Length: 369
Ligand SMILES: [Zn+2]
Image 1: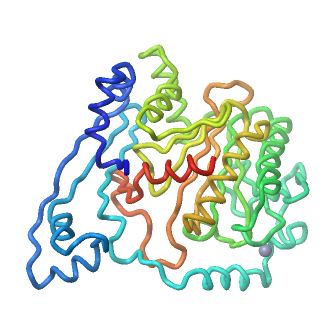
Image 2: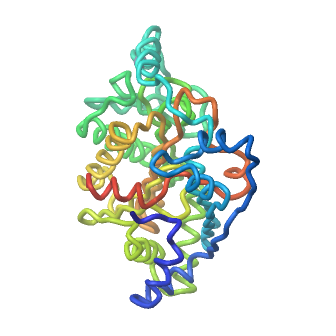
Image 3: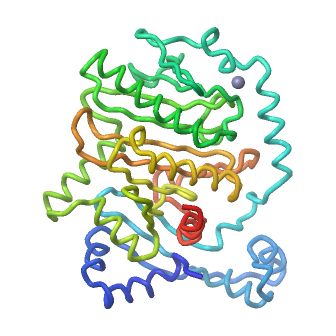
């Protein structure tokens, strides 16, 4: 099975079979591979195997795998994103599954009592220009605003993990209706942003399904500005479209897929687990294909891969010009009842350490898309 740990071999093959795409890799990324070695005392061998061993291997094979760990590190020269992979980390202690399904159901059920968002017109503020109301959701002003225009899409359904295609499409369409409303209301606000923090691990303070919608002025939020600048600088210096090159490279390496005009990339520099990038030339509100792809990924993550808490964000170009495509990012934020945080100092101040192999993720996505 393909693995990110075999990158060196694969990229050397690409150098021969497709030198142009290999050049894209050299232009965008730096990487290296290494081996981390250690000696495990006899008294700790059983524990080490129980923490990190693979049941299909013999004890001796497991010990060798643990004592000689293969590491691969990537850095995107243009965006500053970086990730480190070590296949052993996926099984580190503290992330074993417990009796979560019942706990999760109970959390969702219990939180329904006295839930303000179940009655949004009564228990949430409205924007100064009113609310956008739709079949499956309604907007509300954010009580503690991130920014001058910082509002919420409150889903009709309390359970944030329970949504069908029609409902998800309605949430997205409503976000774009709200962006238009703000822009019509005050033309200085040109930078839309949507982010759905699903459940606590993803940063949500309320269980009830809701997403954040923002419009800002003068300049976009930092990470969006960074990607816009990357795209401009790349075009200036290389003469090519950054996103097309990014897709071409990932596609050649087996890490990308497309559905109509929509492109799907599982990046070699994910911010954290299962991060997927969906690139849509059109606003998702106007692209049925984009909405279908987003829906299928989310449902697969929740129903098949057991994702309980996630972030979904939509980077939009500046109103009304198209300086970047619409970039949708989805990321798993870890198990809701696990004591470990998914991100630590490495992610915040060093490079992201990812356990999920991008080749496993793209394999899943190719099957369902
Ligand atoms: Zn509710």
